[in-house]
Image (tube, rainbow, N blue to C red):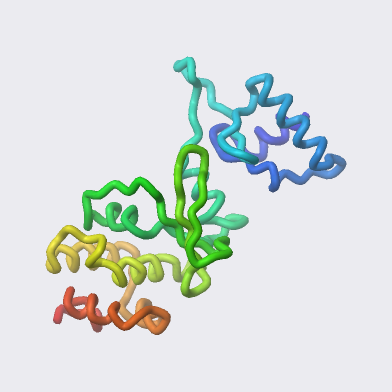
Length: 208
């Protein structure tokens, strides 16, 4: 019965967090026992402590695997479907094409972080969790993500200032981010963010 409920609720190759499973008439102890039985039977697969998934049928003997990015999104970037975090650091700089570095550790800024900086493990991966300067919402997460990058862009970027400006402006245009949107949060950042934006030609939303 629990398997049918889980499959209907989560589907295949989607993270299932035991702590989130709540069904009337089922105690947490009973749920854990059933999860173990389903795992022993091969109907569930363990990803990490407290995290399981229903594997999708595959031609490969090892079967389908659960994506780390999917687990990160469900665990740290969303809360009941609402945005509560974003990817930062070198990984975000890489996504924007500002660096070719591929980070060994994924940096995540999330409302779920209880410390300014904390390193945790997720299966075989290392993650850095950081508290945001401003509470993250669906409306502001891209602005805060960009401001975090601009604060430390000299550390991350391998491109020259003109290329940095081009890529950042393209990102802002793609997501309709205006300078006024950034300005609303800039007071929470150190003064060097103004210098970085000025040197790049981004300050006031126009080339310097």
